[in-house]
Image: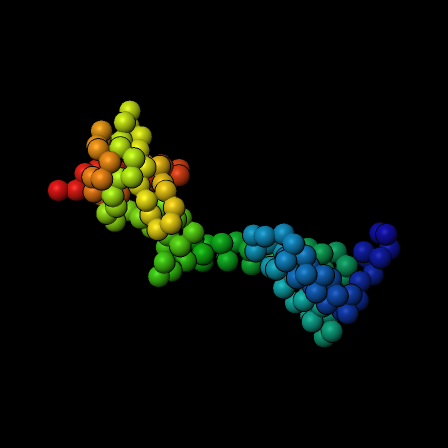
Length: 148
């Protein structure tokens, strides 16, 4: 095994890059893709400039880590923007909307009908039929207050 690792050719680096790129699909987090890019650079560099095996591995590790760090810093300064920031947070989509209680709020808990479903709500004691506005979400329970 050590003989294989000390005698990699340019095309083996490119195959290694493809394998790491494929591994990225199984391991989330944008880590392997940077080491795949580093392996591809080493492979292309080996076409024109033969490097000792020690330098190949050191350069691969340094390029992969540097690319990953640069990418992470870039992503930290530019967060993802979306037109629907609460798309997969269904309860948050209802904040600010007005609904009617189908069950009274007793002991801090009641229910409202939203579409064809019923959601649990928490808030002050109110009678069934009262219109309430959603002010927040606590897990799957909507926090409400009486409109008015």
